[in-house]
Amino acid sequence: MAVLVEDVVQQNLVRRFLERCGHDLRACRFLPLPAGRGCGEKHVRDQYPAQVRACRSSLGKKTSALLVVMIDADKETVAQRHRQLDRELEKAGAQGREAVEPIAVLVPKRHIETWIRALLGEVVDEDTDYTAPVPRPEQIALAARTLHTLTRPSAALSAMPASLAVSIPEWQRIP
Amino acid sequence: MLQRLYADNFRCLVNFEFRPSAKQLVIGRNGTGKSTALDVLSLLRDFSVHGLPCEDRLGEATRTRWQPDVMRQRFELDARCGDSDYQYVLVVEDPTPTAIGRNMIRVKTESVTCGGKPVFLLEEGKVHLFNDRHEDKVQFDFDWRRSGLAIVDERKDNQKLSVFRRWLGGIVHVQMNPWAMLTRSEHEARAPQKNLGNFADWYRHLLLDSSASVHAALADLKEVIPGLEALDAKEAGLNVRVIQATIRSRHGSTPLPHALGDLSEGQRALIALYVLTNCAITPDATLLIDEPDNFIALAEIQPWLLKTLDRVDVQQAQVILVSHHPELLNQMASQGGVLFERPDEGPTRALPFAPSDDSGLTPAEIIARGWEVG
Image (cartoon, rainbow over all chains, first blue to last red):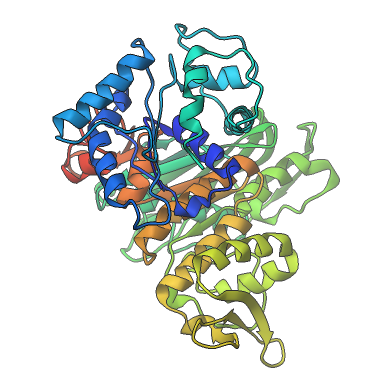
């Protein structure tokens, strides 16, 4: 399993979620984080085609070929971010992502901190910048726990940011 | 937790300041002073808490070569221990510089403050001991070649000082050398040596003193070393124990004993790393590891690193790692990594790793291309 994300906050939320799902974290490959500030979204877009190709080439060969991708919508819409990623595949000569493929693409809007605050019970909107203060590790762990509950098939969905609601089927791609 | 280290006139550290975070990666080219900065911390631990003479680590032996007339060395530590902020200052000087090779130091000043108020002072050969209300209760003359802090006993009325001494004395500084990790132990050791040469002695101590942490380390190691079932200190004579791993091979039904020294260097390094993570990262502790990635397989670096960083969070401890390895650079450099550099081979400077680069390159790739500076 490979995890492609923009920054350490996203990485921590995904790690904690995978842990809740019972995945062996030793078997998860957390891909390099980008160097410069504010270039995380570009980093994910740049790396996406190669990681999709690697995921597809490993289908049937490895015990888990799952690819988890997270990219903030920022001031774009969730649909725009998905289209940008599709275009990256197109540019690389690869087919678009199929619904049956083990590739989960998670797009928080405005950013991951919006989801974390919402999962911790705060009322949030998707336009405000919530990047400061940086969520503490225990807050991320708690958010992942709530997220895990929300993404179980029988979960009752409460009020949540629209981007989080539409991401539920993507989270459910993670076994 | 160490919040600030200041060193002046110590090898390549001149008016040097470093403010590490709880999870600190230090990067930089060879010879930029990364290991030297860690050496200052273990030097102060050994001199000021353990009372070692450190004649080969202070004074003439370590003064900055390009300023031969400066005889004074100054060190400062700012640390947060529990809810209190401490500052430790040590100033040593060479009283009568004469012949080359002679190494004489004199403690000019040594002090500890808690919340800005004194809890210990050694000045002009006189020790002042303060109680927890910062009252100067005891004074006596003292040997100017040694640390006065090292001889202070823990008492009910000097708990503030004791908290600081325990933190400083508990700093663990490791630069692994698996070849030095001997199988045999003739006594217990409360802390590991820098090269882990006394690992067997330390592990023997941990088995008695921190059995839950050792158990957790073993649980991790069972996932890392296939077939590992136990890591024991087996009796091998009067007061002698040998560290022995019990490993079940897929080719035989009976688990077989392997002396620590018979394991591969990589396996020994993995054992050391997981024992350090589980046993040396305790509340408020500071762990320093110089190049933890040496010797171990590429696939093992990230799982160990992430487990270690998680433990630092849980224990509210501190780990300072020095590394050139892409796995560490790509996980930690952009999260507050500090770059050491020495412009024109002059004094070391600690700068935030903040490349202006927006190429989408990984930190390791930026550093490999030499783009990390400027």
